[in-house]
Length: 116
Image (cartoon, rainbow, N blue to C red):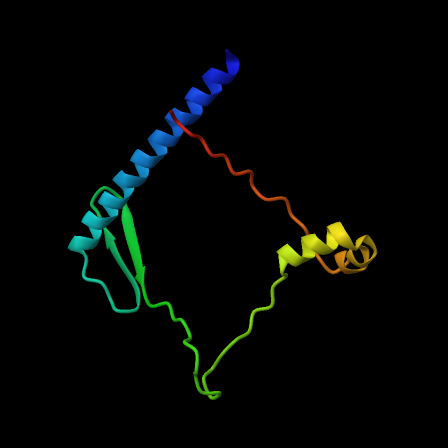
């Protein structure tokens, strides 16, 4: 059956991807073990085979509650998509007014495969 073949191909591809990700992580770890990294910034090494690796290090920061107002901050405004969808369902007129200020792009389909 054509569906069975396509599902088997999908299962094999997902297994190959998982194995490739594991090999990639192992290879990255091995390279990191031989590099002297900076606390922040980029470090590069070149092999004799023409390959070059660059590793960038740094920090991510998370602001905790109770911070002083003198702390440098940025505010990100984003659409509350859950409530936007509720407006679409429950108030078409308001949705029509609001939708002129929203750009919608289709999400990449998510494919979940259950084996067994």
